[in-house]
Length: 120
Image 1 (tube, helix red, strand yellow):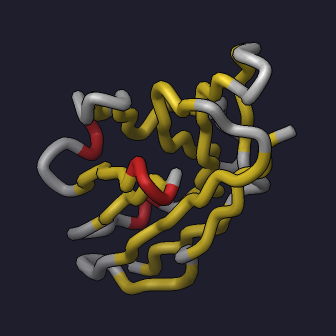
Image 2: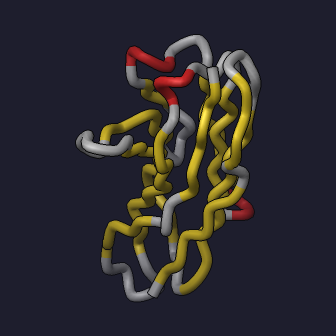
Image 3: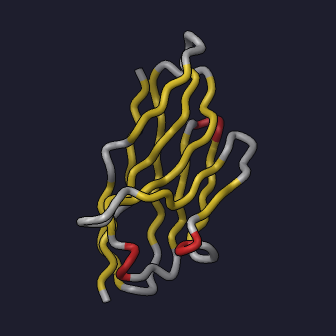
């Protein structure tokens, strides 16, 4: 089994910055893609950014130029640096990982979510 633990959420004023972290632990052989999703009240969960094991990245149009995703493969950790935050970025942010376990079985995992609130 694999656990994803997120940290770094909180309350920030518009224009401010936050950095989210997500550490994976457990029975891991290799982590393929990792990503951040978010879900605002009354809305569908949406992809914010993703990064492959080779560090190729993909961003939602709404966050391009403001958010940066990165990862530390040695520590099985993914980060999301969020700058120039806007009230519409307010949501619960979830970490996601595509993991090949020690038995070489591939599974997808979610973190518990961390709240990001941006005040105007």
